[in-house]
Image (cartoon, rainbow, N blue to C red):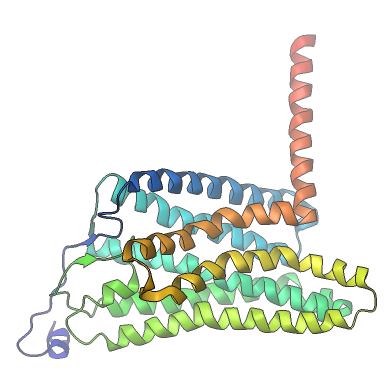
Length: 328
């Protein structure tokens, strides 16, 4: 306690509130219809990502380094949606806007961890496509199961360390101004701005996290596709170029779904109404987990064929069960 008091100053008492109030969607007209929409989005996300994970697990032909990353993306999409949407609906739909101090920090940790892993998993898939296009002869030597597992494990360790640091720095703040968080969840930025002592460390880690989790991955992906585009130009026939490019379309769609809404929301800044901005930010959190499995099922030949096999197998099982029933 002496440490915190010295950090705050002699005349300020360290204040750790019992709870916070999440006010994000309060006052928005007809917002209950949006909650119904979010519930629908969540159900589609859960079903879609569960199907993708099950198909990759059951089909031995998909036990490749690339699909390790796809499995991880489906997992973080599923867990990210489950960490955010049910709590969001509980807070606003059932007027449970009071959330305890420790629960708020836990809520923040899980939401940021899974969102961060979505971004870095797209980087892992970008590395896979980059090596596959620019060095196809050595692709299977370079992109091995061990390589992909090590890369994703490193991302998990790094993200946990980064988010734990960001959340840990919030515990040194004194919240003597307000306990109202103007967001739809326990958001780091709106929360540290409520601190009445020195918020510089939290401000620095916030800027660093945004750069590491959003802008650096985006720049890396753009750079990798510049290299891929240059490599495709060296292919002599148009048909071969298109064939090679088609292997990247699913990943490009995932990148667009994840980054474009964020870029649009941040670029508009204060030009849009705060309520619209909060809704836009919430959509950037819930849309990618819903659309990612749909994109992979529709645009990836291997997963599409695996889904067809599973459906065909289920149909055959149903027919055999019905036949046995009538015979008996």
